[in-house]
Length: 353
Ligand SMILES: [Zn+2]
Ligand SMILES: [Zn+2]
Image 1 (cartoon, rainbow, N blue to C red):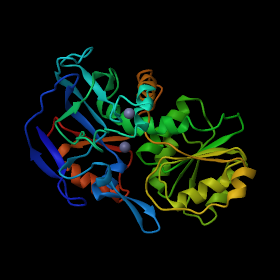
Image 2 (image 1 turned 135 degrees about the vertical axis):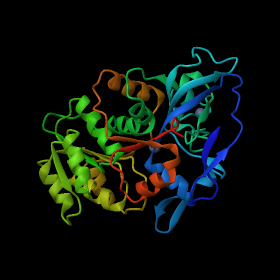
Image 3 (image 1 turned 120 degrees about the vertical axis):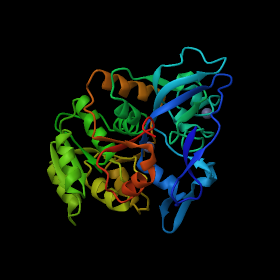
Image 4 (image 1 turned 30 degrees about the vertical axis):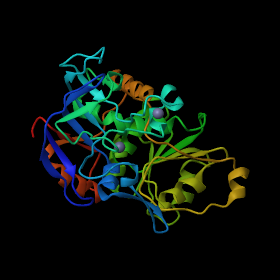
């Protein structure tokens, strides 16, 4: 099998040939056809997340030690099954759910693998989808996506469930309520599509890039806001007519927090998904007085993946712009992603490799 691996953090990935693993027990070997490139891969590639104030979280502390294969949006064909892998057949096309837990702890047993303390996430702690093959520990993590474009299907495993799970953390929305989507890259665009599918019409898309705001408009945003303006928070509050009930931030830096959080109405919620980095200082009394929520949302669980797949199958999710590139363009793709030059999502094509 071919894998594009981190040999040294921050250095170009290397194409490595190694032996294709044989599935044992309940394992399933998937031959990857499409593999999405997510912005969080840029941080894993760099080797750390920026916690602000000079603090860093190094990914090696959670098991990502080179040589390492990233990629948590694999889609492919079942190539081989272990002797105890039931309910799946060679040749079936499947989305691979990557946010796999230990399977034994109470959160895993409750179906919240993504909150497991002994996580085995593909492409984060275990070898992922920047590879011609990926080993999946159990067939339950494979989701049928018949009828969905393969490139778009690949992105459902991270970008769509992250957006879906985050949106589920908004307060109950009334007809006069507004929501803001901060950051209109791959995740922001899919969030717009999910909001539309859920019948939420009052949506303001926020970004610093006019091209991305234009794409957001096409994706269904009613209003757009260029957040480079110094009074962007006041502008956001005014566009929402003082009724900003929810803001979902796919960037996650002090500048985006400082646009969204002050603009919330009382009882509103700021949902943080983006991992750009930094830190903020908050006055405590207004959190209580405004009854606002600041809540984090990290990827999503298997049920949430099945829910977004069902929306996509019913054609209720407008596919986001997807650019399919040969797998060997992975380094150029990561560079462009880091520079903010990618519109929508790039999906690597392993059939062309
Ligand atoms: Zn991701
Ligand atoms: Zn667990």
